[in-house]
Length: 530
Ligand code: CLF
Ligand code: SF4
Image (cartoon, rainbow, N blue to C red; front, side):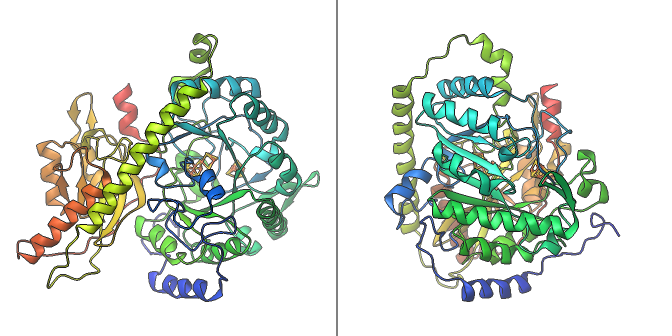
C-alpha cells in the first residue's frame, strides 16, 4: 500500500515521549548554547536573547536568520546558485523540476558563475540592508563544487566583509574541505543528516559517488554516515557553528531522528533542524512517485518535542530555494534576475548605510523583546483555570515581529505556542493566497482552515466578513484587535483574554485537531500573478 494513501500515524506520540526520556538520560550536558551544542531550546538565541551564551557565539548568531528565531523576523538571507553538481542521490530530490513559485531545496531559476554571484550579492546588499547572511545551498551540494563555492566565498570575504558566510552540504566531501571553510571565515555550516544507521540510510540514498565510482546500498550509507560524523567533529574542533538538517520521512526515519539528535549533539552540533519531507508526484522524485507521504503538523511537532533535551532545535526553517532572497518566508529573487542586476550598472557597496540600518533593526528587536517580557509579567493566575493550558495560534505577519498582514495576503502563517509562561514560535504553515486580484477566493478557505486547524485563533491586521465567518465556524477565532502590535505581546494579550472568558463562563476550552502541512507550489499565488 502506498504511504500516501494510508491514514496511519507513523509517529506514536507516546513512544516519542519515551524516547525523550532516553535522550535526557544519555546526553552529557554541553555548555548551554556554546559551540558544543545546547540543551534543547526551541531555537538557540531565540526570543530569550543572549542568555548564557558566550559573547563570541552570540555575535555569530544574533543576526543570522536561521541560527536565531528572533533574528528571522528582522534579518534576511540570500542564496547564490553556484553549485549545480551533487555527489549523492537522495530519494526526495529532483533538481530538474523548477517552478518559479515553488519554495523547496534544489529549486532554482538561474544558475550563476562566481562572478555573477558576487555581483548579485552586492546588488542585493545595497537594496536590502538587513540582508546579513550569504549562503550557498545548491542547487546541488556546495562542497561537490568546491572551486565555484570557494571562489565566490573568497571574493565576498574581500568585497563585503560584514556579510556572514554560510554553506550547506550533505557532508560526503566535508572532511576534505574543512581547511578551506576556515580559510574564508565561513562561520556557519549546515550538514543534512537523515540517519546514523546505514540500514535506514539505504532507504533514503540509492547511491553516492565516492572514490571515482558509484557505490550503492547499505555500503553507500555507511560511507556517507562516517564522513558526516567525521566532518561534524572536525568543524566542532575548529569552532565553526554547525546546524544539522534532517528530513522527517514518516515510516522511514521518524523515531530514528531522536537517535540522530543524540549523536549530533554528542559531536557538538549547535542546532538541529527537523523538517517535513516535501513529496509530490509532480516533482518527479522517487518518494513523490512511490507515494511516500510527508508528515502531518502533529507528527512533525511530536518528533521535534521528543528531541527537546538534545541539541537545540530550529523550528523556523522555510526549506528555501537555492536562489532565495529576503526574509525567511518571503522570496524576492525575481527582483534580482541577471538582466535586472545588469540594468543597475555599477553597484556601490555602502557599508555605513548598511550598519546604520542594522542598528535601527537592533533597536526594534530589543523593543519586541521588552514587549514580550512585559506581556508575560501581566499574565494573571485565574481560579479554576488549568495553569498549564496551552494553545497554538496562527499569525499573519510580513516581518518586523508584528501582526501586520491582512488575512487575505498571507502565503504563510507563523505558529506560536502560548501559555501563561511563554509565547514561542513553533513553526509555520504555507497556504494558498486567499485574496486574488482584490477579491477573496472562497475556494481557498477550506485548505487554509486545514493548514491552521490545530490553532485556537488567528491574529491578523485585517480580515473580511466571509473568511471571518468560515474560520469561526471551524472553531478558529479570527482576531484583528492587535493589528500592528508585536506578535508575542498580541498573542499573550489574546490568551489572557481567552482565559478570562473561560473563567467567566463565556467559553469552554476545547482541544483542537491536527493540521496539514502544505505540499507543492502555491497555486493561488501563481494565478494571482497571471
Ligand atoms: Fe541558507 Fe541554510 Fe545558511 Fe540559512 S537557509 S545555507 S543556514 S543562510 Fe535556513 Fe533556508 Fe532552512 Fe536552510 S531557512 S533551508 S535552514
Ligand atoms: Fe539533492 Fe542535496 Fe540530496 Fe544532492 S544532497 S541529491 S542536491 S537533496
